[in-house]
Image (cartoon, rainbow, N blue to C red; front, side, top):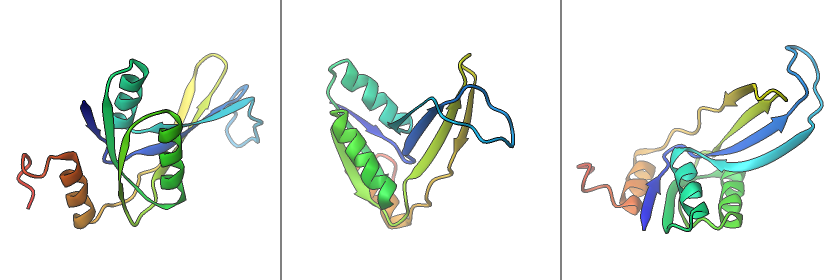
Length: 131
C-alpha cells in the first residue's frame, strides 16, 4: 500500500467559460468539483490504476466534509485528521482554447497538535524527529 500525505488538501472547482474578460459577468458552460492537493492527486491516480493507496490529510469545516464525500465517491481510502480550520477551496476558470486561470486559497494554519496528529497517522513522526 502506498500512503500519501497531503498537508494542504483542497476542493478544486473547475468552471468552463467561453472567454475571460476582466471585470465582466460570465456564465459558466460547465462546472465540476474534485478532491485536490498533491498527495490526494497521487492517490487518485493510483486508485485509477487499481493500486492500493491510503490518503492521509487534515480536513475541517463544511469544505472538509465535502472533501471526505468526494474522496469516498471516488473510491479512495482516506484517513482524515480533524482540524479546527476549514479546508481550502480552489477555483480554475477554463476557456475553450485550454487557457486556465487559477485562484488558490491559502488553506488553514494547523496547530502544533494537528501537525503532530497528522504525522503520527502518516507514520512519519519518528522518522522526522517530531516530539
